[in-house]
Length: 192
Image (cartoon, rainbow, N blue to C red):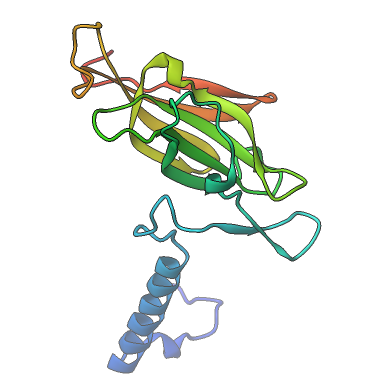
């Protein structure tokens, strides 16, 4: 048998107390990791605040209810159907993405998807239109995560399809790249 040049490691004998201490430490690490995860129950309309790059005061995301939208609603007004905040351009200030449509009593009016930023005054301003209502699309799933906007666009294959029942679906993502929002389409089931 060859002798080790290292000191005797007699303290490496395990006891139930060692196992209990190890299990407690592992539980603490797992609990801490769980607390650092994003809240999966947060909705798209949960208020979002972030810290500005050059200060410590929180900056509120623009309120989409205060913005003016380029919708022709025939005097019916418009509705912010969905909204989600997020820092889309990486400047440390949150933008708000709003899905807006005419306030119709029935049917499925087309939606517009707008990116808002907080202007110098109290009124947010539209800095990008991701979906124009003229495209005759409705918006299904919608989220802002990790600097990207994702949505399911619902549309119609022809004018004969009832406006209540879209028969086309496309999953898309927009990400700020090179000074503009770049749209990508996610591959659907069965596509190569």
